[in-house]
Length: 315
Image 1 (cartoon, rainbow, N blue to C red):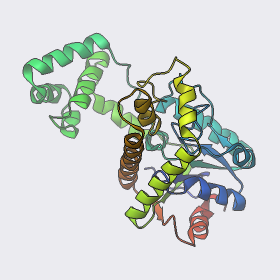
Image 2: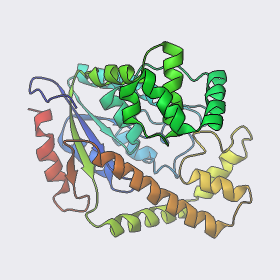
Image 3: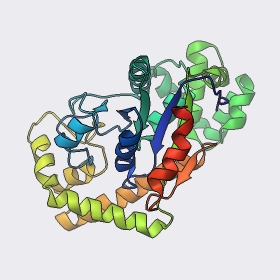
Image 4: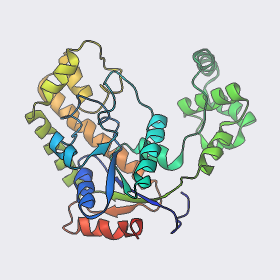
């Protein structure tokens, strides 16, 4: 992470696991600071996916506009690189008006892409990938790891011999570009943002309380007729379970229920379990980041504590 500079503009990140209260805190900060909101959510980008994404209702969005919400049809894909480009554009526009960008959401891949940058890597080559898979099937992935070590010792040191997917990608990048993937990683690490980040992370101090909130929210979604929302997507006929939109937590389980894979009660159970697993992954990402300010999402001093940390953004 680049060093903070008091003379550089600031951007606030409000992050945390699903159901931790990120949107509520972001809106409270907007009540106190000259903030404009940017959504960092890979599901809220889709139109017609409102209940299952916990998207703020139209009245809330009118009062607290969120950029990068409802920008795509569920049939479309959206990458971390696209998000980074869009977010940087929105941040610059907000700053040009003397306002403070506040990014809020739970898609850690997007936050990471914005913060760390993305290596300029070539697209996958199906023929080359198939050849590498055939070599691995014949020789084993440890032998492929040794092959990588000959051309990219640094990259091989960072990857485990059992990490088939990343080993394959590293070998693919080398064959396509003639350069080790470790060089691309260094270029990525050298990328500097034109602003400093104030990273706030929400988490209930009691993990079982987070699980309780996740279950309560899923049941509230079902009570709000989440089934009808997904049924409308199902009946379109042009969407399927391999699309990023339908792979979203909750939608995927509802889709499987419609497909007859299991009953409604199993759908509910699997949806809650998948949401808990998502929260665990989100926390794993957050704990790997240095200098994150952790906040108790159920503290009565949550807003005041967050405002104290956000002060450098408005000084």
